[in-house]
Length: 208
Image (cartoon, rainbow, N blue to C red; front, top):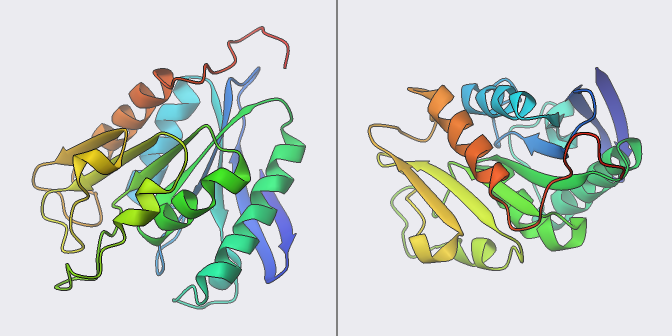
């Protein structure tokens, strides 16, 4: 199901896969130049559907406009919060988890508190620009205010976060920034982590 959502900076588009009697709502998004059909995002979608989660993959407004750079972080975050609020309204009573890959992982971490997310899935978190380790973005992970799962490849030129900066860090050998060698492993790690979240997910049959 495709849902167009208005934001202060133009429309976003959510591709929503629903399950009967869902136990959570997972909202995912893409990186700066990619789309929601990236192999790791699709694999996470598939794995979470299997454990009973409804999944929305969101094309952000800047990509809807055809831009390859997100622009202002503040505007991107404001638009993201509008999208998440609209999706929560459509799926009331569900535990919210949000996430994304690369730049989308940064957005999910920065907005987790404001969105009320119970957790964040950060795929290929870009710790720093390639070759610029002094420009660390680790603080975005630390300030998420909720448990964060980070899945990175050990050959990622954007670096690999420190284990202390996330609840769980999974480093996949041989993977680069695109995480496309074994996307099924990415999905399996995400589903396993979701099932162990400290904030219990609603079980099938429970009333919201």
